[in-house]
Length: 547
Image (cartoon, rainbow, N blue to C red; front, side, top):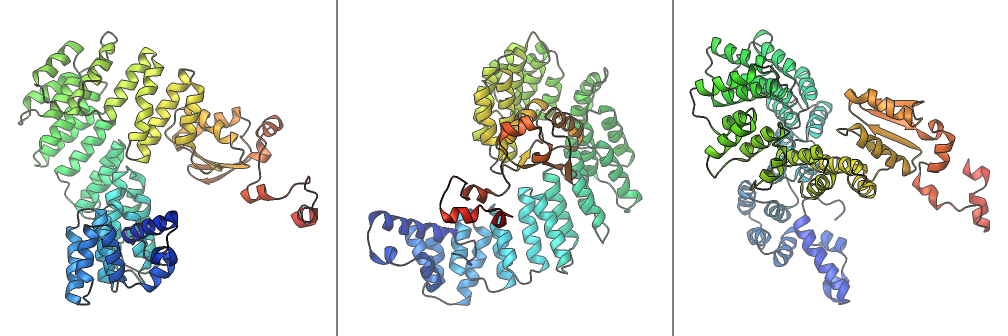
């Protein structure tokens, strides 16, 4: 299917199974005797859709019934209209197989939007690349697809591409890119997008930038943006603006600032809602001030709403173990997972009650990320490294995104190292933390112990150069680690958070001999050696030819 649209996977999968089945059975017929490429090039879309439908009854069959035997534009329009109601990726792909090739910018835009809603962002971007030229509506559909998945790099890249191609981005395009940054907490990039806009923002866009800062607890930046709304852009902050700022204070454990923002809302004539009160109570519960817990209790009693799960969770988390258990039991049998986690927090704060954490952890109907974290922390506090590994290691396989997989792999590796399970630590790190590229290693979000272990494993893969991806705030720790390994000079700073090391020139001789550093080009492994006495080998290994 080279050169064909990437959205043919429904038909291609069915055809691949037919060719494979015929090849295994050694049978003839049109499936074994004709190549896939020639069939794709010679078969009209309607026949391809019918073949896919015969193999895959359901969405593909429904699509083929619309187009097979009919060239009516009304039928084609009806099929494109059905894209809005497709409930799964397979249905979208079946429809797109039936209508290929796409004929107009409108059809491309509908297809891109449908693929984005179905979670097929890569295929949506591939369709956008086929357009010549794409318009603002198609770019908007692609940006929405990236925003849903939190693909902030692709979203910002689309804005840059629009500038290069002379497509003028509107306010909605910028707002959608900022939403993608917000989903991943990329507050610096969200501010960069805001500052690059050629038009003034609206309140919704500003709220998105403030929320991006809130995701990372950047309360000072969030507060500055809140002030800029009225002072710089002439906008009036709303309840959502203040809620995002208060959430940033909560993540930064600044309950005092959260209370100040709550009072400022009232002075502006804004009515705090349930989210405002719960977030402020949570900020007070997390604060280190000795009076903050009493303030949280008082606010929970004085707020004009009935306490909900979020309120109960905040109050349970700041209670003594006996009071926390009493409040927990008073809520009945059905409890939200946040309430369970709050009880684990309260029990973990007391050394005497810490052994009960695992008992309640096992009773949680649907434990989440925080629940597992409390359990691992309880095992580490008790020095039970084996149980900590047994909790964290399975989560590597069950996590549904790469970020969580890497997190739990790092937790499991850390527990293995502390428990002296070195072989298991190497296996987990090699499979989940190194990646296939031996010239690159990602040390972000790793503790110093795990970072040192992963870096040593990366060196054992015998690269000649190595690019290290790190967190800027941990640069001093990285320099210390590299100095311990004798890899501190010379280096090349490729970006703010990437460092490339020339291992051949910086590695001490003893370490270089131990690692047996290899050349950059993997193809060099196929060159004949001096032990090969053939004339061809002599020619290929001569100094002149290798120069």
